[in-house]
Length: 115
Image (cartoon, rainbow, N blue to C red; front, top):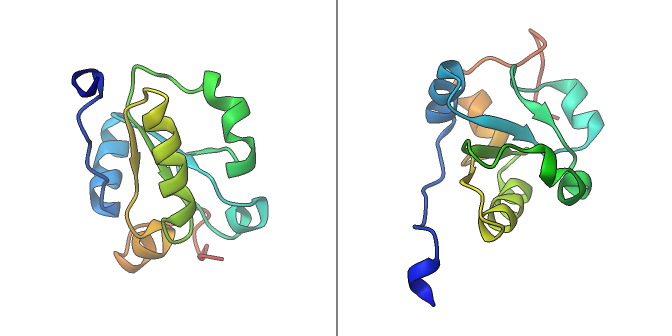
């Protein structure tokens, strides 16, 4: 029955993610590979490789919106769809870390880059 489906939620631009993260309104999860993460990441995020995500689902707070990101937005889009299907308030960061960096938003560590 379609009435039981959660309303379709929008994905977020990197600037929206930065604002939500600064306010503490979201859980931000990096689903990339460890070597990508070492090169550069978003401060205040959490790292769960895409392959490990299903096994870590019960460690993610269902009562708070969760935003996934990767390099370009493709892997995080898959994570977003799976978590929406499981009843989470899940969102994808559009354009991934490439778009975050292009928007001039800070990478951690300072001087970090998108691998």
